[in-house]
Image (tube, rainbow, N blue to C red):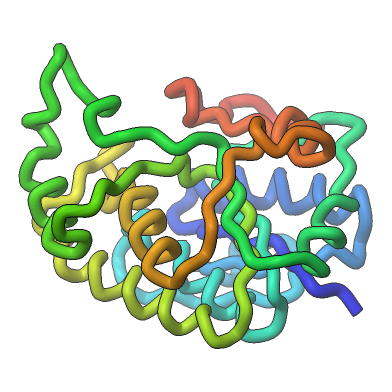
Length: 235
């Protein structure tokens, strides 16, 4: 039985168009891959998806927790991808089977401190957001993880801890969350880092792990990472 699934958040026409492209690519690789997506327009999605989760509230990047929550009720591991991801030829998802059989963990592209998010040498543009987040960590350091692609393996007892804390911090910080591409809830990677850490799950950089993890991330290109959006149809 498949113990892992892909999760996506696809809300709004642009993200739905992007999602349909990458989801079709995944299903072309193997039609049995499980894709779970949260969306505000279920009728706009391609066929063949494992589960579609309707979302009625307005867009916020933190709403990706909704498909993740649904997925982790049934699977112990998820590979979350943003919709503006390009899957290269030769990709091999078999490492996901090994992850699902192994210990808990969050595998990410990078782990960076708040100071790295400066503009013109200053982080004042996100100061209110960071101050709100500090309430949840006290004197502990906290970090940002890139949110466009990550792998999460969690035992059932920790899923509720992660999701409940993620939602609570999200709601508490809504008024001061940054925007990206004129959409709310950017830099949700801070909240993900705090929530997963509080659940006691280790966070690892895929480049440090190496091997098949590195290959997997090399063959999934996240366009927003370099401030590029997907503008061409993938073959």
